[in-house]
Length: 114
Length: 115
Image (tube, rainbow over all chains, first blue to last red):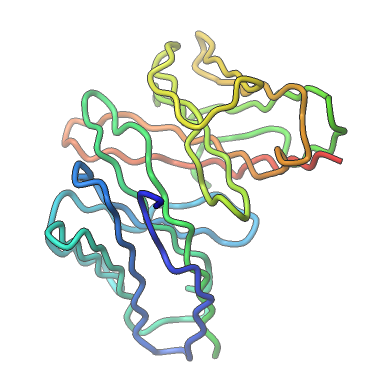
């Protein structure tokens, strides 16, 4: 079993829809949870960063972490064609003086059509 | 643009060969991470350097090695290449900020094709 599981999709929605992306994980030591967006042939870029459980909102994006269920979610409201990309969840247990290695899900490919 | 640069963008080589991938971190970032992204495995952590020293190792093959130089740029050396080494190789850099929230910034990647 991989430490981070993510449904690869693909997911196709109309413009304006609410998108829900999810990951589950098995390592209870994970404390830092991130969502990255990766456009085709580009490097991943950080969208959201959450420490421990709870919600975080940034514009149209909301990240939720439920550590008791080992489940994280990313919601995209009023989705736009420019949101079409692969969304990767990532998490880490390390702190120390640096974040340490990230464990990534396989990524969910999202297409938002006009 | 994340501020992390990687060269070359594309690399085509033959099995058994050796290649070197280069990464320049963002200005001021002391940590460099290398990741491999393939279709079947997703993004996999290879190795981390912090201020010139190896900090953590992941799923890095013995045929692969890396180093971080005094100017903080890093190189990933891949030798005795096999078809299965074809993948995207990403470098990321980070610095631990005062507020405790750290971000890894990814470069554009090097696409390696082994024929």
